[in-house]
Image 1 (cartoon, rainbow, N blue to C red):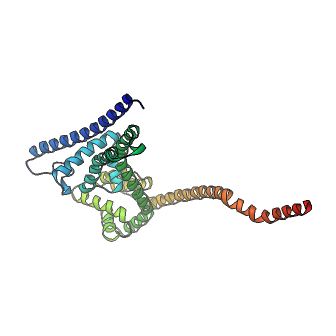
Image 2: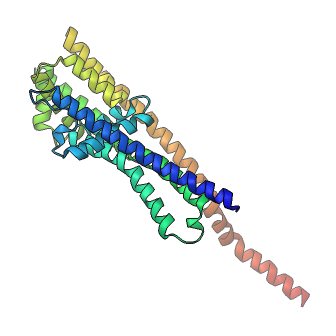
Image 3: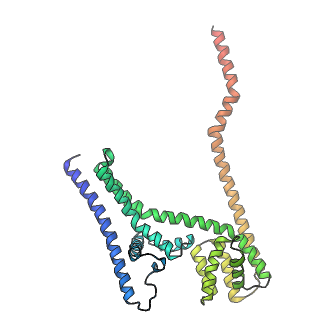
Length: 312
């Protein structure tokens, strides 16, 4: 490698790392300045930002604010808010942890690259590899917290989906007992936490908002849009319609349950078909060769032995 190219690669790595550090520091400073401005305009003591209830220091809140602005560079469709709701990370502490990780993980990975540059030897410490590590570290650092969040949200949505049929059965029983929608939710929150752990948390929050004066239909619509689960959305849409216009609720709920069970039966059949295809590949690759050796092996050895005797 020529000395000029070597120097250019080193300069590019230094510029990239320095730019990332300056950008994060700028976002943190801007977040702290915005927090001070909101505090001046908020003489009544209302929380100045969404991280104020997390019980953390001002520096950590500023880092989280910088991480939120950094996340906005990746999140162009407001996906983060939906994923946080799906994962159940609504508390200020959860948001503080996520956005702090969004700000610090790229810096930690760049710090690892700097350690490799200072103490590394061999090919890993060469400028092309350092430049590759720096670019990969920045990209991975910005995407890794979102990947963890997306995985947690998907796992919780699957748990909620598994609770929907039992949720419908409980609704039918409670409505047949003469309870209203709010009373049914209160009963499930009070007595069904062990049966519906995930949906119980959601309806506990809805009950608090109802007690604060929230409109039932709007709250159910927000829950349906936030969770973005078709089975749950159909049931909540039915509850909104009944809450607004009244009418019979037992038969529509049972019909919705029947549709959900039929859809799950089709999904199970599709899964079985995929599994049978995969098992066929496994049998062709592993089972059939062993079977051929077991069945045809003795005959093949006998033919080889007979031919050897004839030649002798």
